[in-house]
Image 1: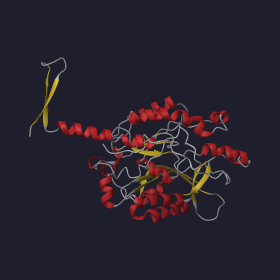
Image 2 (image 1 turned 90 degrees about the vertical axis):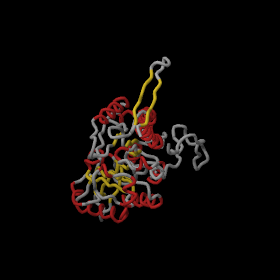
Image 3 (image 1 turned 135 degrees about the horizontal axis):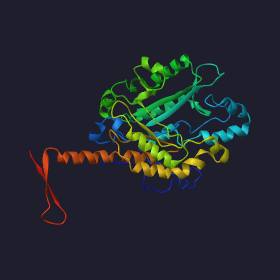
Length: 363
């Protein structure tokens, strides 16, 4: 089995010297977990490995002093002119605690990205957005690229799946920045089953960009959004969520795509109304994430198993480490397969109440 960090470490201390709350997992480094996989796993398609991801990955910081984003209804944008409204919105817009670098260090390799221009702002700058504007996309991508330069065997998925207030010029500007920042690290579109770590290492490619817009058809480095399906449960009920995850896994395409299991709970209007000042983490995530983690522990990767799993506040439990550890199950399956290959089994029921199993090698 390969090593997975993230368990059995003393409580981490904050910069102020106090212990981190018990609900928050200690973040040990899994920065090089892909590069540490045994050859039998690095030769498998990435679509069959268990890979941790984050939901609204960029939302560890949002600007409550900027205008409300165009992803919100007009009515919300109007009442958000009241300063207190935006402070409350921030509690629901933030879905992660860790920066891109901290997520990468913990083992996260899939990033859920929603982007927008700022209406009325001169130029073509693009920002991350989730109700409120986050950092510029360029700043985030540079941070990710710096990590990849340091760890040349790590591979990431960038899923640009929502675009707001962007015309064709904005798209071309964003794509040019993606090309400029990552350069030769970008993975060219090909058959999903050919995308293995070993093949990517040989080509020195580390970044797969999924772009949910028709413009992806003319860029070899942009994978179509339908290659990264991410079914959404849209529920506040954790039991309905887990049932949905099971159902969509059973319906997963066997070939030709990756697959995202969105292990997230989505607040409704009445959720906001009842828990306005508590925020997403205290209302839905904190008490339900243990149930989600228990579901993760029961999964197995593979053609019809889990692939990418995302969640909110991935630092609250050993989320990334648990998902990475699922890949050990592929090793065990390979070992059992190799034991049977080239031989036959004889079962002797005569010697005891429990049958004795003999494996004969035909070589």
